[in-house]
Length: 195
Image: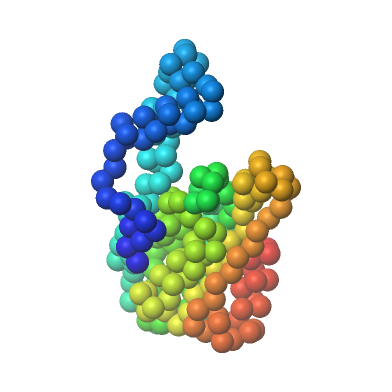
């Protein structure tokens, strides 16, 4: 999957983004030229450039840090912090990812798993898509026997607006390969994810 697989249209234009923020503020009745807001358009544009930096990344590159090995037992990293932006409202969702895979002659560096999560999270996202993207990459492209991802996150669009239910946690799962076909393996993963 390309870093530009969710509607990216090409090159960045921070000045244009700043002008857009200026216009949003003005349209909401805020004077963007006032001392309090004079730097806000630039700050927001810079912030979004960082928050969406995953659009410029190819997460597949993190598979390059893999090593041959006979290890076949499941590997799991629990509680990887993640911060992403809901593509519907551009409001954050914040949580943690539990990520595992069953090697088949090739293991990946553990820090690379966290980098994969971050690369996909730093895009306008849906939690469901994010979960699937991570699981997909750690399955066939890695050459594993299977992968599983569970993400638990608070969607601030539900907390700050709309239904306004703070503390609600959305849980999404994706299972590939042996994790999809073996209920015992899936149950073990889920038990470890709970801690």
